[in-house]
Length: 634
Image 1 (cartoon, rainbow, N blue to C red):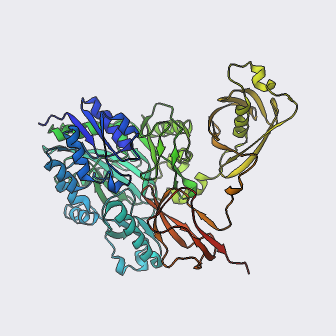
Image 2 (image 1 turned 45 degrees about the horizontal axis):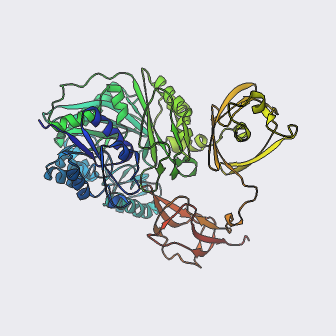
């Protein structure tokens, strides 16, 4: 038995904070590492000690195993937990940790290595009798093989993945997938297999000790995905017959035993519409969605990882599961704009209800360009699936998240969608429903009125009559304010007491009570610089004050392509230069931000008249990248 005393987490953000929470409960000292942008991050503030990794990019910081080990030794840590992502599935790093005399909180390096390449892992699983999809050679693919799914052989998280439905697009998709995989994992190997339409992503959590015991901790469904990254997960996977559940558990245990696995891991499967399971991959680490399994089995998987690493034996069988758990990932991104990640200051993060919230941020923290834009994971557990889904939707609907555009509204609508409520899950959910889930935004008029009233209102201690209009010299004249929200400008004209369809009941700088269509509504208002945030049961709105005299420099010439986010230019279309002809919709530049590539497309057919960036250049949000002069209409 090993007796651990101090734990370094070779990671950042939410997962580092979550691991520290368990480490403290077990009496372990905690050590964080951080890049320069993360110097004041929550996981750094939360640890007993922190060590700087100089630089900003992951390749210079969190992916530098030598610096992480040096930090662990300098801080007196005797164990290293890799979390997920970064070095968590790097067999060489695991070996270096062990060689330094530290305890590795993870499976043996040989098990990581066996599963590190998805292509080699599939060969191993075939020998173990685990069902597999047959691979497709891209060089000899025919229309009968379509659609194809291209996948990075190393790593995960949806990076290096592309769906190909047209052979003419195969070569470009291979290049893009390989470039993204090389950037994310340092390995550009990509393979192809059949893409299963309307398949389900179902996985099994496993836990194994060093004494030969392997637990299969039920199933999870992770089918709701965007860009091949999970958005909503739940346990157990709903609607599976018991025979299929047993097949998945048996296959997962066989996969673990095939590589002499130890610690926590996940075996992922694709389940077809007719109920046939196929092995996808084995993640030799803790998963992002592990909290739903913890909730259902009433376990702390991180605590069990630490105990297994110390040499403790698991009981012969896991505890019995109870109830249902659902997790939603709250991202700083705009689903209506191709899931565009957002950066900036998070002014408020408050999620009500009896839910678990795992986050790496608090109010005032900055969401930067270098890392994944996930703000928090919100988990609800209840006796039934319907109750858990309802509780999670209510918590998210009542959340206040200010400063950044998020996917909060999309999550609420997804959880309340009839297909999801009925357990009709598959990976094409957002392909079919994204437009309806992001459209029909709530009418901002009552919220805009609340914002205007809150701005004009005196403090809450003023007499009620004063708050309802006595602060104006000319009460008979309507007041006017102008705001923008979601790209649309609104002019609000309001009278202190009477409004068409709306009656003002009370107004303070932070809370406005209105009677809207005969229903009393409370609008919570928060001011921050030039932004006003209004939250109510009718939805959340962010209003930007419109200046009376706009700055002429805010105007840009037609055809200007502005950076939709801060990032790095990783590619420029071959031969592109001022004077080049361009076609509407053709990619001109590739911008990398938050681990994902984003294409900058020509807005119209015409001529490129200016190109202001080059490969490798970092750009800020709103920077002028290029200008396209549209060709005259015939």
